[in-house]
Image (cartoon, rainbow, N blue to C red; front, side, top):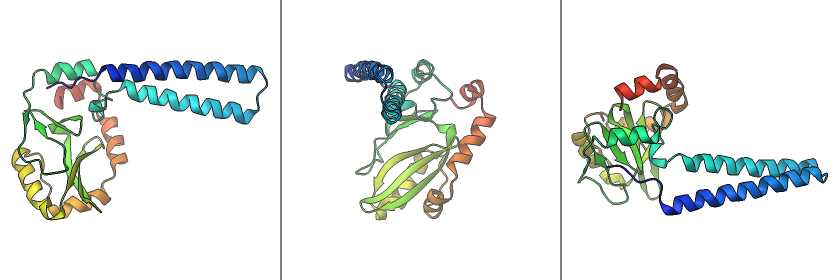
Length: 202
């Protein structure tokens, strides 16, 4: 199950963004030559920077949010083509469909290696309990929203499908406040290379 990331709409957005950035760059250069105020020049540079960031983000498929530092899309695609994903039957209303293979899961438009799963967390909201999967490299991926009365049942069902999940409902809420995702990411990046990630986690 390999997600197609470059749709016609995505190509169109990328082309339009690059064209707009080019025109904006020309405008910045003209303003500079014509003696524009420093404030206007800085404003133009800031806007151009935002567009560069947007284009860079667009070039990175959202499905790679967890693994983008360690794998290129073609590498991910090569790995996933060897996997067989099954859609689970435990998805309650207002949560994303969960697909599971031997080594990966796919949830909320994101691929996550099963070995990379650290724990789960949850926070209470006005429209239900928001449940997240926390990874060893500091990513938090939203599973979806569940009615408070259904949280325990949902986590129990998840554990049957994913033995990697050992969180109970008590620590579920504690993890949301106590997990230091920045520290997790920093430690993981210091200890993990692209080669070791591919060998162990993928």
